Length: 119
Image (cartoon, rainbow, N blue to C red; front, side, top):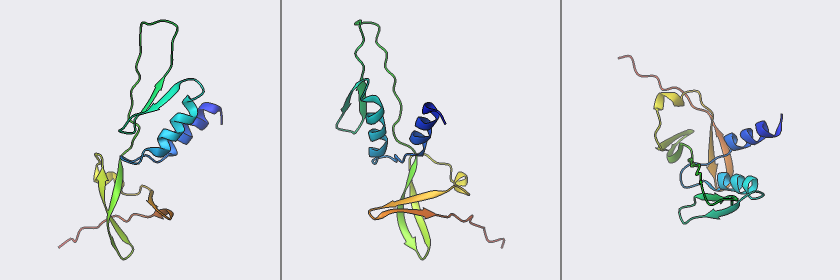
């Protein structure tokens, strides 16, 4: 795997749900610090400034640092209920792997498809 593939893998596998983008910020900071001045605003945004040789033209690249995620709202036996953080299409959840982050570490989750009662 070359450097670009490795970098893309690292970024796509990092966790960064709304309000918890620290892992993504650290990746950006580590990879951009050698070429740019890194700042963090009060909302947690990563601002990287690369000083050019001329005053004009200026270019800004903007992107979201967070991803859609879920917040656990209830435990019932071995089942977990959660609420979305960001827009989500619920049928898409079936069959996707999940990780639940806790203060003690991550827990791998398995989802089951809900079957409606035919009566």
